[in-house]
Image (cartoon, rainbow, N blue to C red):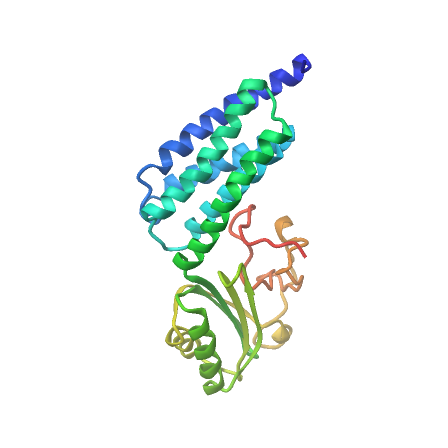
Length: 285
């Protein structure tokens, strides 16, 4: 028999999980366009995250794993401009139903044995595989192009529908601009691609953007910072004041640690620093 204190803690978890499961069930219904209904997708992510955290605290690793995967899928959907069709909604619902079934098993026995947990995980794996494959079809590749000149660093963020065509086209157009590609890296089986290019002095941002867009990308945001090599010149004096780098950036693979008071980060994703303390793009070194 479980100690009274542990039973009470599991009871708190079940109370919270039940509430979050109801939120997920209601929010998944009629979820066709996350762009037009951002609050609903945020509710789904928060609910999944809450269940994940509670399960991790109590050692319910199967619940933690499934809630974590659901949260990751929902974040991808939030980041990418896609409509949720019937197949995608059905797959997300299958993941939710497995999560709800695991929570129900905990409520019956105030615990979860390994056999039940492994059985439910075995049901979830093929759903995960199908979701991964289908999302690769639906979600356009997230593109980040970091263009460096002797004066500035421009970061273009957006999407492309055909990674192969974009990669070939951007290579040709960079050559036409007189530049070179110094890095091209893919993540998530091509869901994200990062390209660094070096261009001649005084290359115009309009020409760079046009090259990226004509290569097949839709640009969402553009960020610009001064190149650190110019610090101390008459045009770009060194700032004496310094601000501590955001804590979330320490240990991130994208944070190189160079700074000049005004622009503290040399990050391909967030050159001016993350907008919130919970950076969705953080990757450990």
